[in-house]
Amino acid sequence: MAAVHNKLNTKHAVAAYNKESIAGKHLHDVNNNVEDVALVYNAKMASDAEHAMSLMQGFRTYPKAMAWSIALSTSLVMEGYDTSLIYSLFAQPTFARKYGTPVGDGTYQVSAAWHPV
Image (cartoon, rainbow, N blue to C red):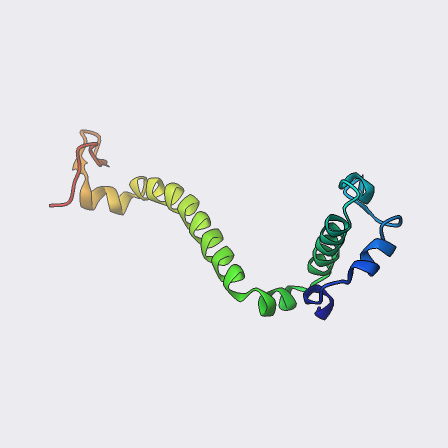
């Protein structure tokens, strides 16, 4: 993990210049600029290190990002659950008896204009 935060020196990046390929694009496609090569190589090394992290290492390294991800995912799941749950309440006989009006066949129906009193 410490390798992610340590900057690789330019010599190391240039030595890796001919060996590495990043997402199908060779490093020599980066305008042959030594600083660009070092930047791209360092980004690849950091990305590889993050992909190799376990779940707990991710929680320890990025706690705020993980918390936001969990909060957003949970709210999206609950929104999907809520949209199907509310309509299933209308079909429950007890709910219909409490908030609906009797229909001629002995059942109750919640009107479209229903609102709490």
